[in-house]
Image: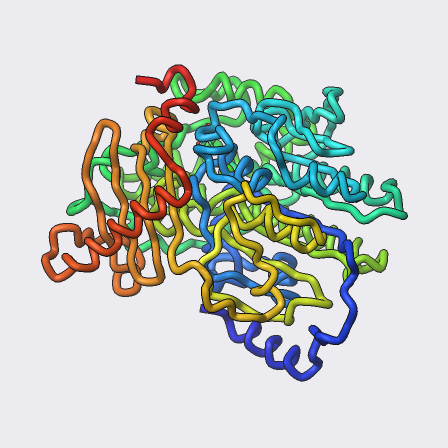
Length: 525
Ligand code: SGN
Ligand code: CA
């Protein structure tokens, strides 16, 4: 899966022995946790992706470890962020959907780090409704935040800033690093909004990829045959759900806005742009929009056109993330911070780039279940290494505490990745991961489901207004097109997986009572 460049780097690292075990590690390394929003592993060149290049994000993998099997436990933003902070699954930390407000009085890893003398900060997307707790400094976007000229809330005070969100988040992050207490170690959460919907690129990148035609995923025209109602009844198809103004950028000047669609939203974000930004925007999109409107596309061609527009905008947003992460990595190097700082890169979940005809996430299918995860820490981690162990976002809090020398509280449900980062191969490491998605009825109409995935198979139970199972052989059917639930050849595998799934449910304490307790009012039956 990894490209040849990575193998080459790994070879060189082997000789130079960058992770000399006799070297004394700093007792309290600095920790930078980078989280993007909706960054699909398919759009990272270090993951073998071929649709774009991410040279700066690849630096983290080349100088550290790439995890090939990292999974989210509930594929949606606020729940993922709450799992990160608490090291507990959604049904225990209470943040089971985006609709909940995070209970900031509970135990989180930043609070424990603060107690042991770390400075803690978060800059960028927060998305947990309640104010951050456990941070000495916070400068967050309200809700989802805006791409252009966004408001930020800095330690409780809301201010507007001119500029592009990915650049601003990086500016504020570097400012904080410059002005921190240099005597203390720090933990910094650098959390991007990009590449979240509606994928608005920086003015500098509006024509990037204009000359690239991205290959349609082979299951773009999926008809969901053989799978249950959830796959067929979702509202995630690129050709059915994307809005003209916000998603497809077909509106431009307000006078051109078409009735219907998301004009109200578009008028708000377009209205916030400066004159200079609007000129750049229209200069880039108008000729392309005019050409599309004149082409008289068939339904099929229009669907493919939407896919191309989506991919170009989405990847443009990632290009800006890549540049800005590069800026931060350069800052660390130039300021002597590279050796004593752990840099972790992940996204709040995976994302669909046209697979099954979709955008968005939520399903336990591979593209939204898997998350990118790369970690660099030169004194400990072998350069250019990769790991296949099954890890979860549930492991992030225990890992960070462990790196900082803090005892991991019993109530945290994840495992520390430290042995793996050191290059050890723990033989009692988990063999499967657990998943539970709750936000239904809700945006994109993905039904509630829970499931189990091991190296070879995935079993999912859809429930609430449905009651059926799906089984996939991931090795032979990585695109999960072939539901084997009724195949007698898989009977014993099915029984084994079901039993393990119920054991995991029990192990993690996931009960229908807790689901009812934490469901937002409008979702309660
Ligand atoms: C918004 C988006 C959805 C997206 C959710 C959750 N719609 O509601 O497409 O699924 O956020 O995303 S939008 O028209 O407002 O962009 S999450 O990553 O924050 O969970
Ligand atoms: Ca997200």
